[in-house]
Image 1 (tube, rainbow, N blue to C red):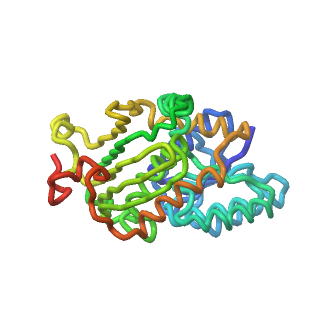
Image 2: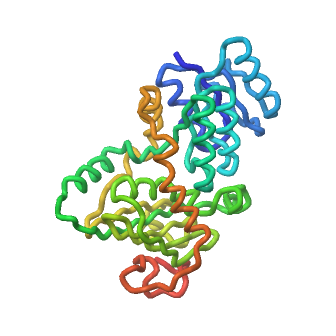
Length: 321
């Protein structure tokens, strides 16, 4: 049985990590969050030592290590801009690290973490759950079996509408979240590079607080993408169905269905990590580089076939129906 510490216990994604630690037969010995709304822990690990001050959490983890009972893993669910520092904390305590997406905000952060990994002899693993989704695995196998050197056309659309709280939180601060492409899109860009290869061209047609769109050319695909947290950008039939999320991936006119099971892959991720098969720093690099480039790109003119369908023939994205 492995021992875990959790940073970010009050966050939205933390319950999936608590569930994964429990379901893989391990235990949580310590948790930290500056917010104390963590009653969910009673459903999993009620005896866990919980801290609202990082200094006390740090002291507790250090004490365990000095007493000969170091934690085996530090799981990180904190805000994006803190991931780098919290990963370093875990490595310096001689623990392997499991970190939510995005691993870090900038590609050079990964370069530095690779050096710290080597220094302490521990590993950093990123939750890239789409790589474990059966539909995505089947698509990867399908593309790999195609020997025609075909360049595929693909439209990716993800709208996860959020309320007014979103922009008022750290998620609405680009310096903390990395912006919309980083915060809600990084795992899709990871999936695309995993299946279709390295990026050759990265153009941004729209980059606003709550929505972004662009054109990404990969080794085996030309991708038109659209990301949004703006409810008004949802297709009308989705609104009429009282839904707030729209996820679509269309390959050569064929809808690739991967909605089911999208949020239930953390336990499988933990199982693979515990077997030594998790996705490390190098695997995370391409998607982090893509979203960094999107964040810092100049807006390109919208050109014909490079334009995502949601941007065609409209003056404002907020008018999409």
